[in-house]
Length: 141
Image 1 (cartoon, rainbow, N blue to C red):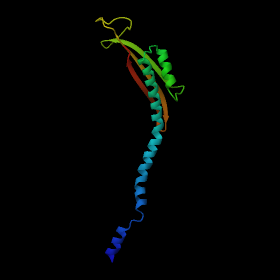
Image 2 (image 1 turned 135 degrees about the vertical axis):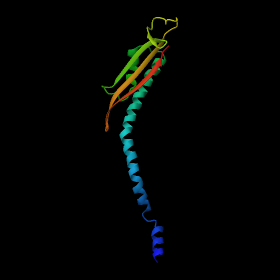
Image 3 (image 1 turned 45 degrees about the vertical axis):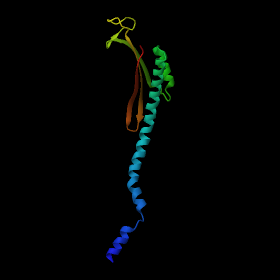
Image 4 (image 1 turned 90 degrees about the vertical axis):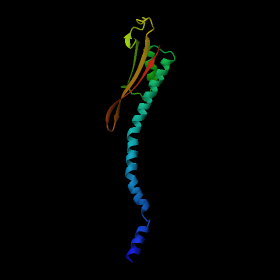
């Protein structure tokens, strides 16, 4: 009789779904909380990166004026706040050393031209403030 009761109890499947749900629910809740916490931050990073990429494309199609590059990048940045910044730096180099863009290198070669676009924002998240940046370096000649 005792064996038949134990067999009946072990064979009973009532409540199995509730137990499985109780085991899975905490993991699922943690995943959903993580997505809810970090998805907005990823959206900000993506918008900032898209703007910097747009500025880089402008440079690659012939844009050379730093103010225009800044304007193109700023205009392309969806959701940009007034405190967010875009910086454009341009320089030339010969054999890895900074050189004037208007004079030839010591070996009579043309100096390499570079443009760097950097966007920066402070993202206020539930875990605290974070400075987010996106940078692209473009060789212009």
